[in-house]
Length: 133
Image (tube, rainbow, N blue to C red; front, side, top):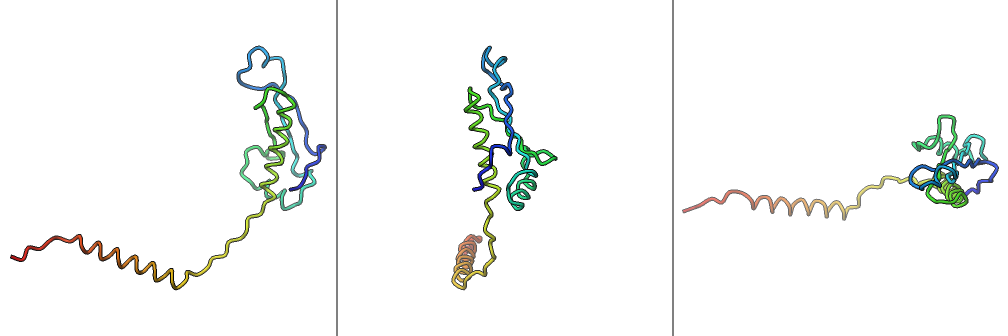
């Protein structure tokens, strides 16, 4: 996983939303992390995967914005924001293996046809009963 230097993102303290009593109005414990994808030291492939992802946290200018307000302390929210940034970049740097289509084997074709024949026999047994008397 590529390590992101601290100078490539900015951390801004803001007031958190939600419950918190009187403290919520005077303490800026939430963190806004802003990471400019274009100006980062990531490889071009990772940058393209990040920019082409459908993540709503990425602005039209290519800036990833993460808001961390889960914890009550600013330091914990900073750690959370940076960890989430690393997780996003980790998922973008992972390349999925290309799946190549293969032909079904002869045995699997035979199993399929045998199953269909057995099912047909079961369905034929559901016909009307004819009274020959």
